[in-house]
Length: 120
Image 1: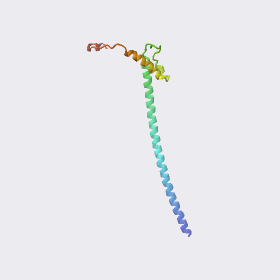
Image 2: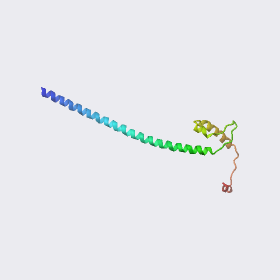
Image 3: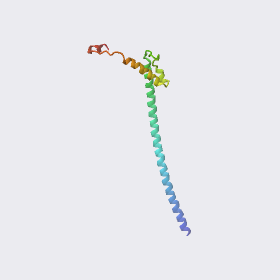
Image 4: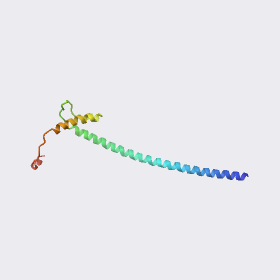
């Protein structure tokens, strides 16, 4: 009777060890998936940082280009100020620029002949 109990215990221990091994395999699979996602997120973050730096430099170039333009004051007594964009108030800058664009749109349009293009 003692030998059969020992055999039963050994069998239960072997079965429990197999279950634990399967659980450890599942945990390893999960950790591998987490590792893959972490690597993908890291690569995406690096790409996003590079794109952000590129966009920032392009914004600076556009601001420098806009700084070269001087617009006449509008009827309301305001003019487009590029600094408003960098100060976080792009709507006001857009609104003022739109008013200036509407003024320009009302200017007369002159048709050009083929001979006129050489002057430009």
